[in-house]
Amino acid sequence: MKLVTAIIKPFRMDDVRAALSDIGVQGITATEVKGFGRQKGHTELYRGAEYVVDFLPKVKLEIAVAEDRVEATIEAIVKAASTGKIGDGKIFVTSLEQVIRIRTGETGEEAI
Image 1 (cartoon, one colour):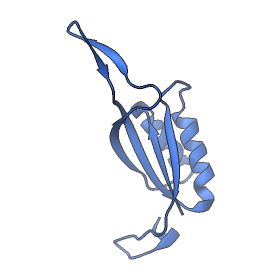
Image 2 (cartoon, helix red, strand yellow):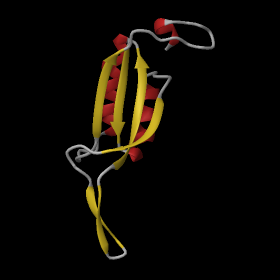
Image 3 (tube, one colour):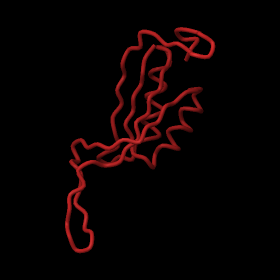
Image 4 (tube, one colour):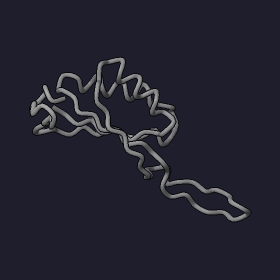
C-alpha cells in the first residue's frame, strides 16, 4: 500500500477529484495549505503599497491506494492538475505499513 500526497493549485481540485473518481479511487483527504517552491511567491500592490506574498495557497491531497494502483493514480493527478506553468505542484509517494478502518476493524487493502 502507498500514500500518494499531491500538492496542487486550488482551482485544479475539482478536475483532479473527477479524474481520480474516473479511475476508481474512492477516498481522498484534502487540506488547504500554503507554501512556495521555485516560484518563491510574488509581489502585489495594495492601496499603493507593494508587498510580497511569500506563501501561496495550495491544496494538499492524500490518497491511500493499493500498490498496483499507484501509477494510474499519479497519471490521473498529473494529467488533471497540469497547467504547464510554474507552481503546478508536486506528488510524493510513501509506503504505508498498515491501514485500519475504524468502523469495521478491517485492515490492509480491504480498509482502503
